[in-house]
Image (cartoon, rainbow, N blue to C red; front, side, top):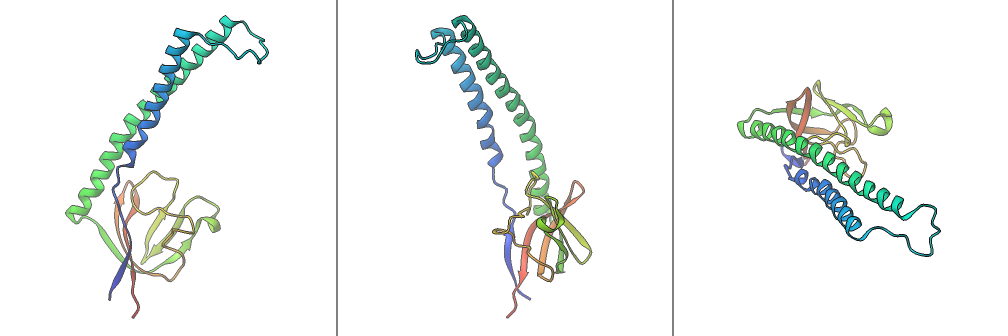
Length: 181
């Protein structure tokens, strides 16, 4: 029996690029606060003035500090999240390298797509091994539920799935489909 690989886990480093978001927010907040402190803040002459110039300077300074504060909060959250993500990724990588993964072969049963189940996760089983995944989860492994890219589409598909039991769920590491000659 020959199988065609449809999906294999990829450990990209996308999480490190996310740290740029809070850094940019902090940068914008600090630069705007310095510019306001140095130059003040004035409205264009065509905008009616309902507030005094001192109020506007204080208000914009407060807004700049608030933006910077939110940036630092986001940065702290990302700095906590990234090491946890690295630990999770390393555990799964080590399981693959050490051969501590499981393989199940058979036909898909109990397939429940997102649209049918009225929830954001899909479920199916192969030989009484249950799988559940969602695109909304921040996890490694297969978790595509959109129609255009998903691999598991219906009951009866003959698949071979390599998976790892991680935090109480079966994480799909590789999906292969039986090739019928």
